[in-house]
Image (cartoon, rainbow, N blue to C red; front, side, top):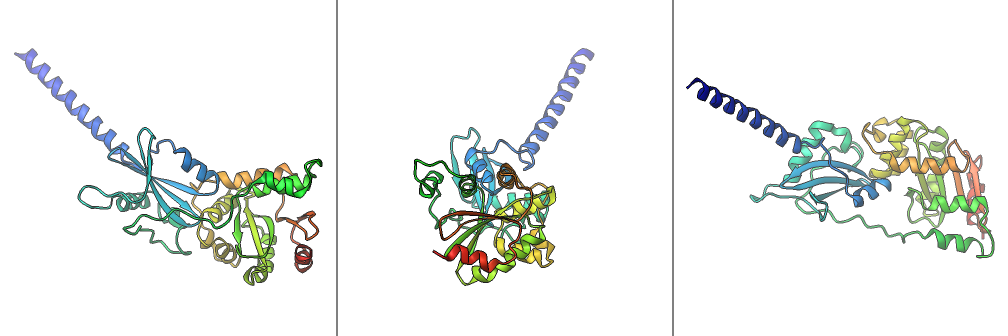
Length: 310
């Protein structure tokens, strides 16, 4: 009888332990910090400057929030990775699961992770009841081979400046003044005072439609690297940059967990060509030659005339 009771007691204890383990495993499965492998389409977006946050699992679907140019998009991926859908997730009763996942993420990560969405200082990132539209750009995709062909004939090798120009065109940049008539590229560090002054000097030409600046954010130290990543992924990047330059530190308050993959690629291009300072300005002159300026130009009007003069 004692043996039977002892076996029954051991079985009961084993079931209690098993139940405890099962509950713990279920809790871990639904915790956003237990992140599965990032799907390749989202990983590619991160490499291009977007930021991604894991929302957790619901009914076998892994949820992700992708932030691209300040705009949140929501994706749900099957466990085996065979399918992915974009939009908001609801349960069978019509309750929005995405809202709850975002609330849990905010509780874990704090408001800093949401600083890149909406307007500067705006913390309300609750999605509307309709799925966001995919990000659409009006610019044509860039073909670096076509650019190389257009710079020189196929019988001539590219000069180092032309090769650097091709590298830059395939880097991760954002545009200040997308409708500008003339174009320059600039590697900038958010904490670089010369970069801040350069963009401030270029702003009148940007505002009147004469110039577009393709800004390639980099960071020369880990702190400015995170700020550069926020510029790439966040909303209103030029406004953020200028407000930060004028003393508003909250404009580029980047969390420690932000991905810096895209800005590190930009930095690797800069270092590849032997530069370790900012700004570095690259443009094609009106004559067709590629010019490289190390540091802030002393006379930006002269530079602009060199770009605009055919």
